[in-house]
Image (cartoon, rainbow, N blue to C red):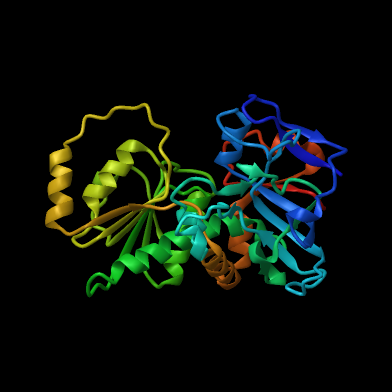
Length: 348
């Protein structure tokens, strides 16, 4: 069968293999026909050779962690043949740590977790894959064209779950949300904020292209410029750019008892002249919270599936700005100017 693979650690080793072996039964009881995989920044970093780890003894790593497939067989009865399904990316470590032992593998403390298409588990960019029932998330049939968005939605579902948990520290009724960055994570974070009935603002650099319209379609307000130029103090910030200057600015911008969730990852290696004392004073005197969030566990994937089911299907479809057949796989992994989400499709 066909599979898109890399040699981990070797830059630009991406290739389409025609004779990749069928998924072994050890991978899971549920056999799935791939429909599509999403492409994200993690894939680009793996292709560049920055990281990635093949399973022990494997000839390479099948990439692709944003999955969508259709069940071919499930002898466990968890799902039925024909059901839409996505595979959870991260699996708990075998030790396990205290968090993995209670299925909070997104909060693994010892780093021995594995991840499909990233770390020691084959990914989903292959014509057929297997998954254990515990890591198989069924999807509403109406999401057949957009279900590949489930993985990034699970990331922001976790972010909002943790925002809600932190909010219980006091009597708090948030009204406004600032999302910085209008990539897939930012737009989906804004979607979940509007589903909570909050007043949503999205800040991004783009003045043209599809992003302003997508934000407006949510009933949210689109901004360009800098954080400092905004004329309000948000109760909640979901920072999705990872840009160091923006990260520091939003920490100072949040309203008293505000919550700032850092969901973007900075590349590092850049020094900024910044008044750390002023930031400390703001956070302490205003009782603000800043926390980081990445990955997701089963609870968040289920929350994400519900959020996608409630969303406008045409809006979700607009997030997928390019659909590329697997035969033209290299095009899917070559960035284009107005890309939001690219889907590599195995069936057309």
